[in-house]
Each structure stands twice: as structure tokens, then as C-alpha cells.
Image (cartoon, rainbow, N blue to C red; front, side):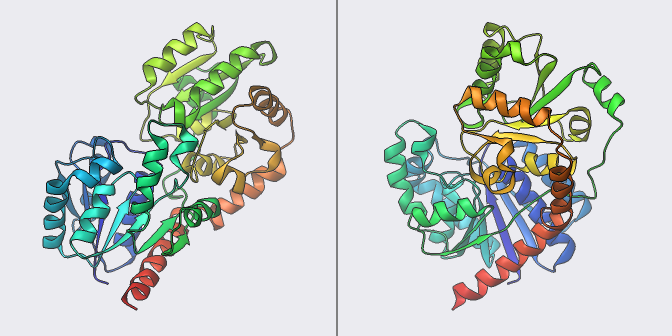
Length: 385
């Protein structure tokens, strides 16, 4: 294996894209592989991150394309014959030994899976979210789940990020090799900032207990609406607790309206996503992850590094990593607020120390990169056999 190509035609920039860029960085620093990245040219955040890597590693090859995820994703990809053919032609010219298709879910970048197979190349799906779409209650979810059974058969191997995600893939009928590779923050670039300065930066009063929700603003997936309605319902119990929502997304306007109609404008503040979240983690007291579904949230691992308690819905990577006392059932407002208050008032020292230790030894960029590369090599050998 000498040349690999990453493929991501998504227009968003979530944890799976960030982790893919981190994998590229590790491979450029620690291997002799020639690495390319094909991406949708309209994804400015991804382009900015990749451009930074090009400045540092001039031999990273970038291949912007005009095509992005099909309108109806899986069905749209199946019907996009000319687009798939053009992407396959471009990939064939690059001549990678393997194509790593960066997928938040199996539908994302499905054009890349089809193109890699059309080009008769090995494809590895890097995928953190493996739940059925019926759990998300999306449009035509049963039909899309049925179509996705075809896409789950395409990759020669899968790299996923939690034991639960691997289990879900098996339930989807996957027969290819599935490897669990835990990711985590780059410990060289994360630093604790001075708390008072960090709070001043965001206009936070020192007397407030600040909980943060750091995620793309997508209500059905990330659960912002559930958290806001829960806070409104039990506002009298929350005393000096404030919520800082960090991020942006397609549902930001809906969230703003919900905050206003819930009477929480004085208690909840939205700030845009930034490249440096160290000031956020240094300013807050707790992270909350009220998601309907997740993979292994990168923000959870970052918060663990900063010694923060994390209250989360009891699913996926959170269920696998966090103590039971910090978890609540998604959709149960009373349990969510009671868990938040219990964790706030508890001595979490032992958990916090253990989490920091796990970040230093298990969940970090170096360990992720090492195991990612090892998995690529093993997959390459096995698919040859």
C-alpha cells in the first residue's frame, strides 16, 4: 500500500470529518504513504482544515470536486449514474490502493462508495453512526433503511468508533471486517486557559454554574430542543445554572425561537462555532450531550481531557464510556434535569481523574492514528487474500 485517498462529499463539518482530517495528519507525519483527499469544494470548513495541512505537509494532494451528497442521499446516489462515473474516472486517474470513504452515516458520501466500486478499487468506510434511520424518525426512514442494506454490502472493510457501532453494523448484515478505532483530541494543541479570562470572553458571571452543549444545531439528531424544553419545565430547580450553546446549523433559527417562547432568553446563550474551543472548555463547569443518537462524540473526549463532568443520554459511545450515574434516558426530561443536578452536587473527582488518564493513554490523536494505520494495513492484506 503506497497511496490512499480519502473521500468526503458532505457539505457539513462534523466529528467524522474532523477525525478524518486528524487521521490524515497522523499518516502524513508518521508514514511514507502518499495521501490525497477528495472533497466537495463548497465545504469551506473542511477546505480550511485541509489547507492548513497542505501548508505543513506540502505533499498532501487535494482534489476538490463540484459534486456533493445527493439530494435524497442513498436513493439519489443510486440514480446519479453520470456523477458516479465522473467521480470514478477521477479516482482511477489518481490510482489509490484504497479509498477511505468518510461517512457520518452510511448515506453520507455514498457516491464515493459507488464510485470506488465502479473504479474497481478497495473501499473502506470510516463510519461512526450505524443506527437505523428509523431511530431518527426521518422522512421515508423505512425505505431508506432498506436501500441502505445495499450500501452496507459495498465496503471491503469498516472502521468505526465504538463497540455499539460495531454491533449495529453486524445487525445491518455486514459481513466485511469491522474494526473499532477510538479517536480523541490532539494533546499537543489543547491547553487550559485561565478561567476568569475565558469567562470574560463570553460574558459569563463568575457566580453562574455554566453547562455547555457543543454540537451542530440539528434538533432531531443533537437534542437541543429536548434540553430547552426540559430546562423550561424544571426552571425553578435550576437556580444559577446557565446554558451555553456552542455551534451553528440548519436549525439555529428554530432554536432561537424555542428559547424565546420557553422564557429562557436570560438563561441560554448561543455562540458560534470556533476553531479553538479551549476557552469554552476552560470557562464552563459541565458538558451536556442530550443527543438522540451519537457515535463516539469528540466533544465528550475533549471535555474528559479538561476534567469536566458530562451529563448525557444513555446511548452509543456515551453509554460505553461514561459512568452510569452521569446518564439519563433520552426523552425523559425529569431524569435529565435530576441527573444534571445530581452530578453538579456530587464529588466527581475519581471519575474525572480516571477520564483524564484514559485520554492520555487511549483516546488521543496518537493512539487513534497508530490504530487507524494498523487497521488500514490489516485490511489491505486481508482484501488481497
